[in-house]
Length: 341
Ligand code: AHR
Image (cartoon, rainbow, N blue to C red; front, side, top):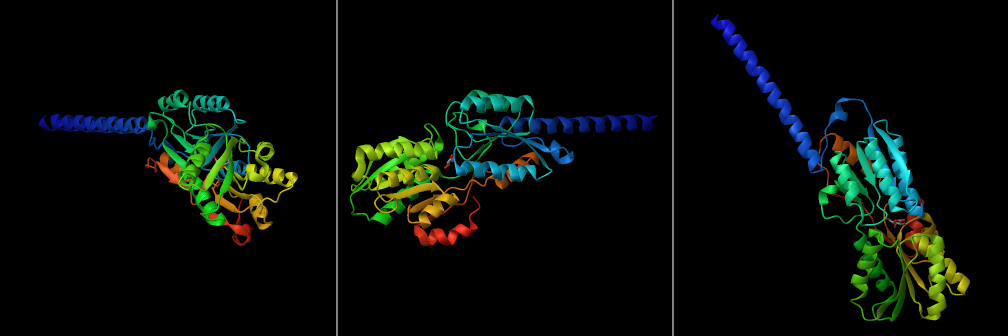
């Protein structure tokens, strides 16, 4: 009788211990999802693909097309992933709709390249409440609650702006009076705000250098050309340099300068950010001078981050991309054969 009693006591204890373990496990998963830095590792055990919903801004530039291709190529060729892609055509409202649709479809991870910095709180709170981690791609957002996104994969735009200014001053000379016109990216985008800030940080320290005009060219070639035409009309021969927040606008500006009758790269120096092949060609042809690289090939980093998250690992808050600067035709010529975008 004593043995039977002992057997039941032992079994009861085992059941108690097991149920305590399982409660502990689910508490962990919930608290991980709460701080939005890790998720349940259900996918590890099953063969279900990791479903990633990617909300892309649009196709305004060569850089962005390269980013889209990198993400599609990486995730669509890896059987561990299923990609749901949405093109917002430059509209934040379309991105918010896409995010809501991803939430309704219960994707595992949301990747968001946010067109502008502000206005994301509500929809990201919905994602958080649904337990879906959000990875920001290439541009940042401004939110009070930093736990609304898990990680940011991309460049240091302030540093890019600072590098653009430093290289321009190196090229022209510290003591030379220089009037600069600036072609800004999309209004409200972190890529525009930070590149403007970084450039101004350096230029403001040199009395000889002045930004005489600054206006948005919306990151597109056609708008860059149009704005440069207006700058030339108002300031013509006074312009010594163009700082464009991306290559497409610089390429538009080059066209405008040629049509105006001046020589881009010589009469007016050109510095821009991105590093697409077309700007390398322009530098080699002597029509532009400085390329500040910004890497759009974020597919592999996104895939790694998504896998790590699904395995319950912590990922870096800022996954940085490696970048450099190219000055002059020799450097551009040497680099062009290896360029991937
Ligand atoms: O956010 C990155 C910027 O967006 C790129 O520099 C630009 O070309 C793009 O469209």
